[in-house]
Length: 315
Image (cartoon, rainbow, N blue to C red; front, side, top):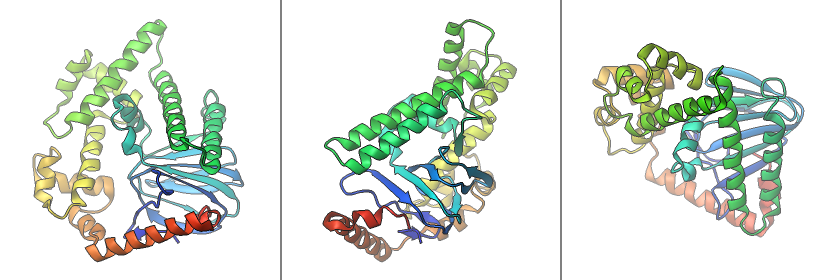
């Protein structure tokens, strides 16, 4: 079973004194629908691993990677094999604006294989293996080294995605200019999603006509402007709904929705339930929080006294 689960929200039990967790998973067990705040990277070392993320199914073969973005609903497992399951608190990197925008580009998941990403599969796989080595060797400054590799991985992915998503017949300088424009647009939306943003306004900000902007934005993000905007609003709404002090109406207004009905409708489309159902499902009583804290502290103490090898086998 998943270590700490409230409803379908998993609380990741990070390695002591870090914001990281890596499992050397060998369990042939199906893990039901769940989500968590950290980023997750799955890489099979032996066999094929089935994962469903946001209703899309993946068969991850040996050496392939699946990156699952924070908050994405997913289930996995049920087959024999061996795989690395790495989780990291990406909130520590959100201050790097273009990196946060790059994360949004791959939402909810990105499957990296030798066939669909021949230019980056080898380097990406190498970085994940280096992360695993750093994690298990537990040398001084290992967390800093691992986060440096996470940044390198996302720069690799974002640059590759940008080049293939906006093919240009112009010079390399012109292509770089277009990529920088759309990264700026994504950063702007991420910071101003709770405002009354319109397609006309954002297109003008980018310097393109509305038609040209809409076409290029969909190529760059794999979604339309309004779907991208609403996804950012609902991501923020999820965080606010976890706080019992905020009413659903308050959350709707804080996230930029003009009406409660529009918020409820969009929330159900993206999350598969209404805000009221979500709030009820993820409401955690203080005694449950305390129990989770005690169990987490116990697990950490057990790891520090020799239980680490057992903790590496997930669930």
